[in-house]
Length: 588
Image (cartoon, rainbow, N blue to C red):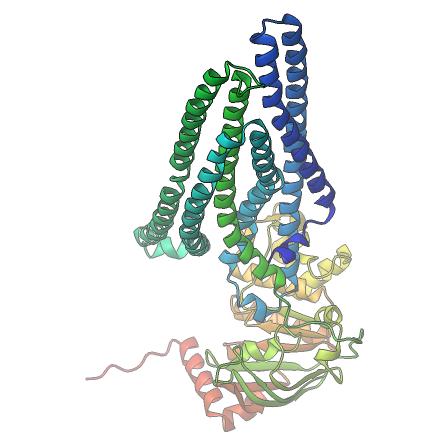
């Protein structure tokens, strides 16, 4: 896990090393300060020698100022290293998510990815800053303080060797109990973010069904879980402070008592025993050692939190896309000729239920193809195999005479434009949304695509035309307008294959027919695949595929299917009756 995360350190390795070096220098100064204080007391104050007071006081002041400067530099550079590391982690995670296929994305839901990019990265950032500064200082401070203490008086310094193991053991017990609680907390954070995201996206549904109280209670329930778990963890961590303070006071009492007896016995003579300055130094080192252990406990607490976050971040970073470029990819798609050869597909390899089962079909380049079938008949799954949003489990999908798995992914997906069931627009102007599929599109090409999609009329009537701002998810345009913008965006790619996955459902019948006519007249060489629930959207197609339960049950033109396919004729009759206001006769 650490190896995966450290790859994101990159250009901040140097600043991290500088921070560590400065931290070590700072520790050395802090070890010297108590010795200078001891000399100031013993040679200056006790001997009433003003020259020694000035001499050691000046040295002490210089060392303290240097320690302050180095501490400030260390904090500044350390903050720069940790924030840079966090920025790299976010970018690397986001970049890796962009390479995911649909099957990879299925493993992580949106709210979880957002939590990992925000809360989890912040936890790792804070822990890293503590590691390169405090975690380096603490062990060096403890080791050097003990060594110097033993040089002053080995018998009194044995107190440290008794207290430290006891305190360390207690801290480890606390950390082991806290770690699993934080792991659960971050899973609850995912659920909380998911609830918020669902609520905000479906706020119109919530309002229309008067379910505000239900949503509030759902949020409150998850929030309560997080509160209870965090409170439990914090209660355990709260034992750190009294443990540390108790040990510190015990050490200070023992050192003061034993040192006082030694000073009286020696007459405050360093030659025969302990001096007042030595005692002051020992108490200072005791405070440094125990304060360092307290910092160490804080570091462990932070690392405990960060370790759960690190695991979650590493899961994203180490996830490899299921769909990758072949070794020697092909960079040109000849035409929009498509063939499915004995294709079978499942989302979960452990599932016995096939989503698509032994599909065989051929679509000639330039044809208009209609696909219809009931909900769950796998219409969308079928077309998602063409641009390799998923890969087949068995068989092959051939485009332009070549298996799609042999193409360069960018080449393939630039040749296949999809307008999905969920018409997604991004925050930005209409023009910015349209050129999402082709950044180099000219204004003439943009206007032409909008004319074909029948979007130019409503765009001209907008306040700023193509520079009109679109809110996130296109909330300030109607469903039909959103669909037409998405179709225009797909057309700008100038694809070999255009797939409309139920993406004209919000258009009225007249507009739908005009869009179909534009496709036939202006992009005759582009293969058009239209998934629809409305037969009027596909009845003039060159071929219509009828799907049921992951299989193609019939192929033909509209008139042929009315005669030979019961599923198609039943759909047609039900829609025809609905259009004419058909009402069943009441029973008497």
